[in-house]
Length: 59
Image (cartoon, rainbow, N blue to C red; front, side):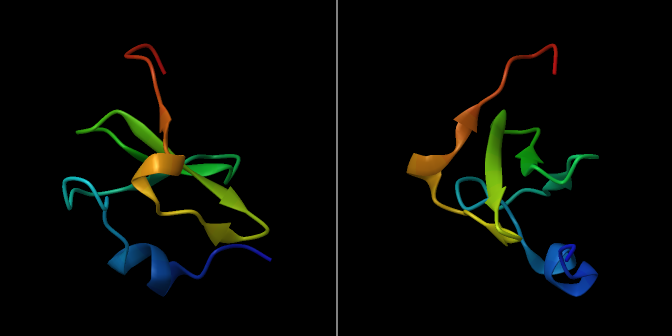
């Protein structure tokens, strides 16, 4: 089951309130401002700053 489009439209980065981008493989949501990836587990986005994964500039 994929994430609901309406949910994706209202989710923002909890750190900067910026836009989130869904990765093609639907493994996470990325904030390009903060360079953080919020993982998606069992179709549930984990929107905790402490659980976010720092991404490199090249990703």
